Image 1 (cartoon, rainbow, N blue to C red):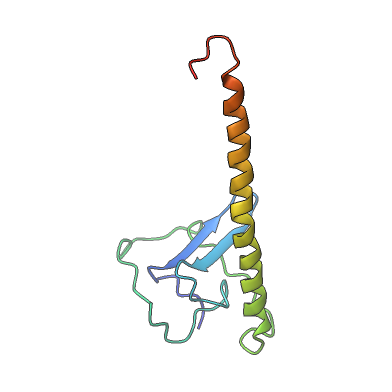
Image 2 (cartoon, helix red, strand yellow):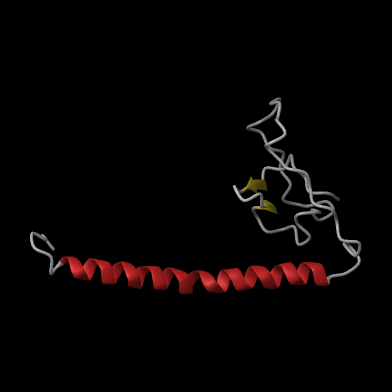
Length: 116
């Protein structure tokens, strides 16, 4: 079943560089951005935009499906492992940013007129 764009949990986001993300906010579509699971138990129709007319910029077209989609579990496994890499990097990046901020705040104590 293709991604259900009328589902409450479907999200599409485009970035200035042209990249687009199409996903299930509940992470229940292992073959996103191409397919939702058959008979997804979490499907809920989107109510906030009933009867709205969507322009072409709201949801970009779905990228072409790989030929092995639905036959090969390695696609979902690859997407899951990529997500794990991003999730693992998050805390490290946040820690580095916090350390840099702490260093910057530390220098204020030595500046003339600093109230810290």
